[in-house]
Length: 113
Length: 111
Image 1 (cartoon, rainbow over the protein chains, first blue to last red):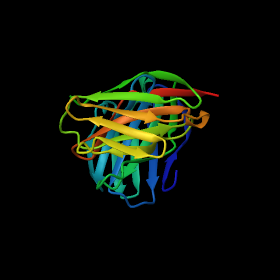
Image 2 (cartoon, one colour; image 1 turned 90 degrees about the vertical axis):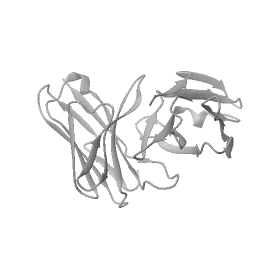
Image 3 (cartoon, rainbow over the protein chains, first blue to last red; image 1 turned 60 degrees about the vertical axis):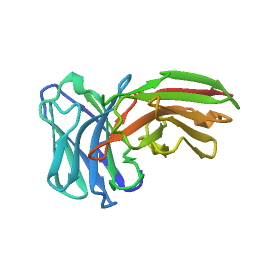
């Protein structure tokens, strides 16, 4: 998707290992989000950021941490991956004003074995 | 109170028919209601959105109907086409510019 890139696109990792997913934007948007998508649950917010070094928890934040040291980058870390964290992870960006909504990245499919 | 309940889970419609997806919410603080369309292997993309002071919004074949008193809103896809086959999510915005999503509806349009 234009202006927002997620990496890697696919990853397989072992239980107990740390994993970091990266979201990079070129839109200079203030807000960045990490969601996970699971069948029957839609998209659930993990963490979000409303500025550099300003982050907050979402509804499913346990086992995840985030960092935002630059406007353009938002990192999601699974501190010790578990099988329940097997999911598709989406990053999104938003200007935070008006009715622009979110722009989503293409997602990272993470499998924890 | 933060939930958005979406139905049906899946929907099959004949080409040319009307697809209807419904959502309901409890939190009266929600102030923006977008719909997203997602194709396999892609991220969700904004389709159409409405604010609660408007009862209907139409963009091409897509219409949102909003019933504030019932706390319900729905997406209508007129003249449904096979290219509309996708997963659709309703959402609602809360404070902090956060979106809460419904569970999604898988739409299949049969040609």
